Length: 257
Length: 276
Image (cartoon, rainbow over all chains, first blue to last red; front, side, top):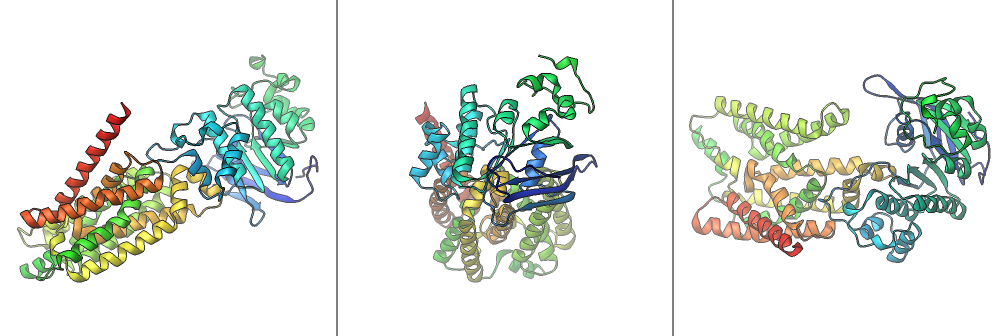
């Protein structure tokens, strides 16, 4: 399967999934035959219905899950910055934001303060990690991912819990990080507006890859319209409430706005 | 037979000098404090307790086979720790379910074995609650060396242990050796149990892991504060406990743990009052 060289992509592949399948212990396939790659300077976004395997794809790409079939290739020595989708630091562990950001990143105080300022979280420096709200934690996690000076940023719904204006700022930040460092970005996003405007390559996953390509190509694909409805094509519909959508459905009257 | 048994249970007729016993017990705390802190962060507080119960089987086995008690405890604790890690990865049962099952299953087997192989009326009290003042010199030296090795290994993996406690997934994605660090932690706890069996006994071992760390949490602002704070709580508990035990001829294990528990109550009460 191929990926059009778009955006700032210069052909330098950082991560490649080839025919990846993941089977649950129950025997059910969570992912089947998923292939795509992420290049230096490229923003690849994974979209798809809830329960469709987006997070499983990311975790397999990172080596947290071992695929049942297929292969995952990561460029040797690849530095990864990651923001997991679900993280709940335990209050038993006394850990400030400052210490968390220094832990294993080798970042000095000035770098840490600068990174927090860029994610709009400068006031959280001395807070305890366990006391942060969901949105605050996301900002701190993005700051940590930045401080790792990654070759590849992997962001699993990075703006969840962040308010509306904050969302736009964080998406701008992700784009400018790509510009500055030339890192690749693999992201799961529910924000179709960002996906369409800020992404080089879109992979729509519902157990298998329904469709993939440039945002333009994907938005015109019948499987995409089938999954997200015509409303999503017209403008960025909120489709987060969609569950277990049936394949091949061209139109879902229940989901019009 | 009886004589042999007593030798096993009480150690040599000539115990180590008091200062050496003190030193060995303090060295033990250098390793139990950081190990206990990480276990608390990972919600593994019952790990030590479960190992202690399971190790009863090791004690009975060693006594029946005329082997040193420490060897039986070490083998059983390490095997249980490694088995629990492997089985939990399979995902059918979580750590707590596995630990609870192994703890009570092996405790029952140990008690049966002891009932069958030991003479009637054999006293297993010191196996359960410790008999630190009858420690042999060679045991004291083994404890000091073993505890220092474990403490150094834990400190060397410290950043990974802390990051893993925040999120294993994050640490793993960033490329840290998370599984190795977790294996090190659990096997260290098993090895510490074998070393501490004489000092604290199987049932009080877990309290050495968790009570000083839990007490230190009251004022800790960083992970290092908590681990070092746990050492600082354990220090007076050990020194005070041993002196009191010797002076008043009372059991040393419970004396040490009681003082540590006193610190826990005091610190958390003070922290609570300060917050009000």
